[in-house]
Amino acid sequence: MKLQRLLSLTRKALDDYNMIEDGDRIAIGISGGKDSLTLLYALAHIRRFYPKKFDIEAITVSMGFEGMDFTAVEKLCVELEVNYTVVETEIADIIFSHRKESNPCSLCAKMRKGAFNAKAKELGCNKEAFAHHYDDVIETMMMSLIYEGRFHCFSPVTHLNKSEITLIRPLIYIEEADIKGFRNAYNLPVVKNPCPVDGFTKRQYAKELIKTLQSESPGLKERLFHAIKTSHIPGWNRPDFMSDPKPV
Image (cartoon, rainbow, N blue to C red; front, top):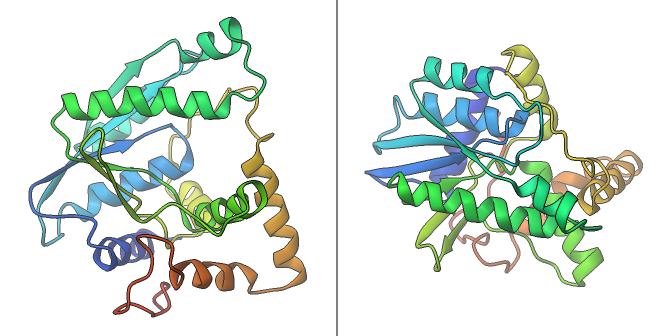
């Protein structure tokens, strides 16, 4: 995927769901993975020409795994003229050494979000941007069906009342395969995730299930996304917006 397509699809999501207002200061969650680096790249470029003026802060919550090096990410931020902050934590030690969690994902996510929210507020941000993409949307809905028994998914825009921050997801129209292509084409400095449960989660199960169903029924992902977009899930259904999210 080329930069022009990335910017086109990202801007369409921003416009369709009114994700950005004049004067916003947006904290981008940078895990070091391909998704968050692609989001960083997109918003840093869109910031230069978007009619609504906004600023961005890149924030990495380091879990404390040994050997994690975000120097290359910092260099990219300098090139993109984005301020970059690494929040050092002991989350990995707490979860895997002290608590010895057998199902650590929920607690880990809660602790990382807490550290991220605190730093975002400290930096004066009123919004946060997460790099959930098209496939994440579908996988989250599938997980909700399998494990919760309901048709549900996160929203493109979510207001967090407790922290008084609005969360946006500008990559919802971009498929993971395109993000992989962008990572390769632009040599994004991906930092490998050392988490011992990476690749063995409920999300990974949903991903593999959808992949199998897609191979058996081509077009399945598009139909599932359309079902989410036109459902009564809070934040998704817009009467004035029923078009295909992928511009030609």
